[in-house]
Length: 179
Image (cartoon, rainbow, N blue to C red; front, side, top):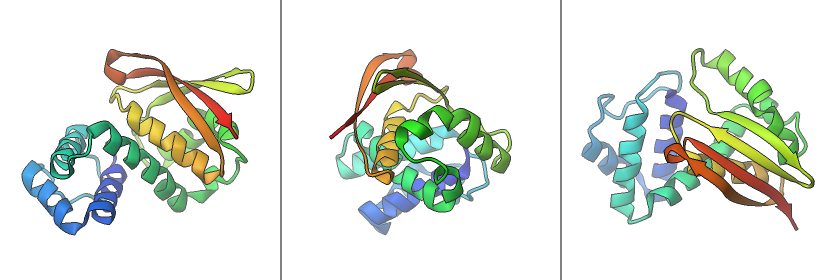
């Protein structure tokens, strides 16, 4: 997993829970990286999972809620780092069908050999079915990113899971604009 995910996660932990909590998480997990991450480095996903589990224990917040909150936070941070990737779109429903062929294509240029999730969009009238496939199985992160995207476009979305299998590696979301 690319280091940018780790650096942003640690930044969120520091911002939301404080530097002491971030330090406690790193000390408790004792990752091979010693908690020193660079945006362009590559690190095992298991380190991130271990830190999320430890953060949950430190804060008494459920893991799914933490992962979701990180997804929401991450969208804003990625947008601030690369606004040109998102500014070409006018809405969440315009961006979603272009995730793989536009956004992820650009990410692969920046971070060669990055293993990204796959998204397929199926319009359903005014709604959209979003098929998420990832070997990492982080649907709560994907849902948080979706909500971060909607917040960026000043939209209110209702997101529901229609189908989930393979430990969250395959999830079909129904996304609907409300209000």
